[in-house]
Length: 290
Image 1 (spheres, rainbow, N blue to C red):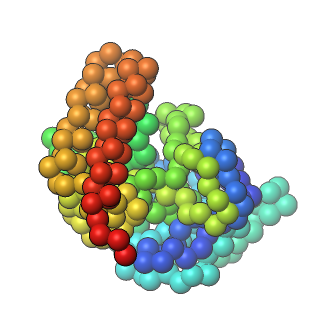
Image 2: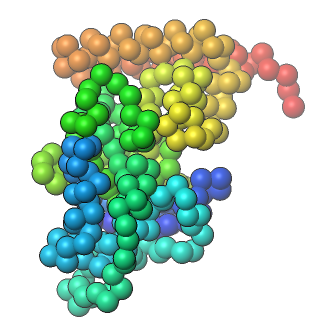
């Protein structure tokens, strides 16, 4: 289900996070990094059974894809630094279509359920947030919340993109190439990346103050984010200022949703960002020198 991956992308250890995706050379903003179709997509009530059925069916799932799926984090097995190479996820060439054909893995549905719970994403949430340029929001099925009937919510899992770790300033953006049934996504650099930079997306709604983001990450993924944005906000912005900024973003988002005016979104968002930067600069200037 991986149609393309740049030669710049590789898998490496991300300190404190496990495995992650990185670039081996400088990558300019907007460069295409990978194109990937969903391995499985179904209502939440069926996603585990559908994925299990595909994994067992040689006609729909190659041994290579099966190995890719079971290389993903299940929340139990601690993966080592060099246990998976990017070559496993590269699109197979004609001469190696049958590679690993005898290495199929026996499994039970509990393992599939754990991997799905750790790595699947809510499709409707993704498509809605994409309208304002946000990264897809991962969620843990066992802790799903919201007014939508969880059993009917459409979810999907992408294999190599599941190795993207979280940042509140994600280095990757994405776009939909095929919304149904494959849910094919294109991932590209959100800004200029130096050699060795990690590719990250966001697991949560970024238009929240630091405390709200931290609570959501703790609830969904049981970890604390230490990205530069979180650290700077803690140093430079008082909680009430951060909350006001996010409230203003929500107002602009509501306007954009009604008017679908991209120019309005860009103009007003830029104004908020500049105001936030001025507040942060003022806050940092008051900190004692090292």
